[in-house]
Structure formats: structure tokens, C-alpha cells
Image 1 (cartoon, helix red, strand yellow):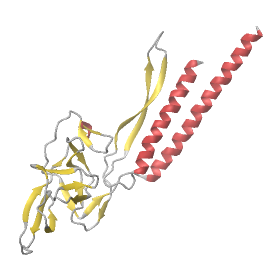
Image 2 (cartoon, helix red, strand yellow):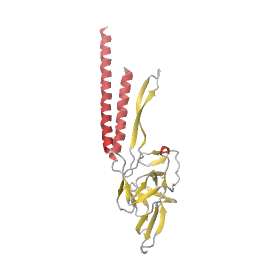
Image 3 (spheres, one colour):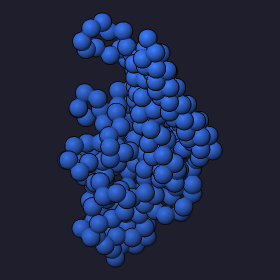
Image 4 (cartoon, one colour):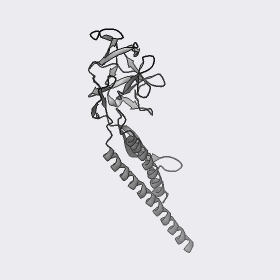
Length: 247
């Protein structure tokens, strides 16, 4: 009897955790460059006193859906989208190098190029800083940033940096709680010259709201089933106790 109750209890708990992954995907359906998290459940053996005869379910965030989102053309000079595979290199809050698909960039008061969340964009020689004031910012397909210095004629373009673009094996990177990707070995990735960017555009989230809503309904139904199993276990236990008292 305790086996049935234990499995149902752990199943209900893991359904709630899967719902949190699902809800996070829905919350980021409009987040630029967001990659949907994938959740999977598997059985785990419970070890303790006695024989390991019990199992419990465990839901884990297995990976992410790395399919590209749709390209939205904005016409803004500091908006960038990666064409195909690859990531922008940024400096995370902890100072370590991390990677993102979100290309909605902006300039700080000091001319530093940063993401919409405040992470500094990394170039070939560290964080990229533009000389202020500047006009006519242009970004080439390889990530090179060209600007027109203040007071210079429109024909004069000066290179101020090149965004570091990487294209790692997605099995070798892991997503952190801040939404940024990092190398699993804790190191830095090498730049890949084959990664191209599209200026004046953004990559939308690859979350499919319809699929996420359908999965949410299915998870809620599973949760209700687990509760019914726990109720059934209680009823069977009560019946067994009544039968013993009869003797």
C-alpha cells in the first residue's frame, strides 16, 4: 500500500515542477531570443532501510528547444538577429562569459554596448565600447560594428569592434537561471567566423503558446489523477484496517 501512495505522492510533486517549467515558457513567449525549456520525467529507485523495492518519479529540465524563432525586422541599428545557428557572447553578472540569442542591444551613457538585461556585449578584445557621440551605426554580417564619428562626413566609417559570435555543440552548453547559456566545462568558447548576423532585426522566442497550453492542461489532468490515486490508497488502507478489527 505504501508503494502506491509513495508513487502517487512523488508523481503529483513532479507534475507541479513540470508545470513550473511550462509556465516559465509561457511567460517568455515574447522574450527576444528565448529558447523553450524541455521537461522530461523518469523513474528513480528509492534507497533506504530495507530492500530498494520502491521507485519514485522525477521531472527534470532535460534541455532546451534550440530551433530558431521567427525574424522580426525592426529597422533599429542596434537590433541584431543571428541567422541560423550561433550565439552572441556577453559578460554575465558574475563577470563570466555567457551566451545568448537575444540581440536587442543598447548603449550606456559611457558608450558600452549591452543587452536589454544589462549584460555587456563581448568583442574580440573584451567588452565593446563605442566612442560617443556617434552617428550612423552599421553592423556587418560578421558582427563588425562601423560608426560615423561625430563631425565626420557620411562617407567616413570607423570600425570600433567586432561582436564575438560562437557556435558550440548545444550538448556542451547549459542554461542558467538567468537565461544565459554557459559552457558545461566552465571555460570560454572560441569565436566562429561562420556565424552571421542580420542587422535591424530581432529573433523572437521559439515558444509555441498553443503547445504550451495543451501541455499545461495535460499536466493538470495528470496531477488530478495522482491525487485520486492517493485517495484510493487511503480508502484501501481504511478498508484493510476495518477488516483486521473485525477479527
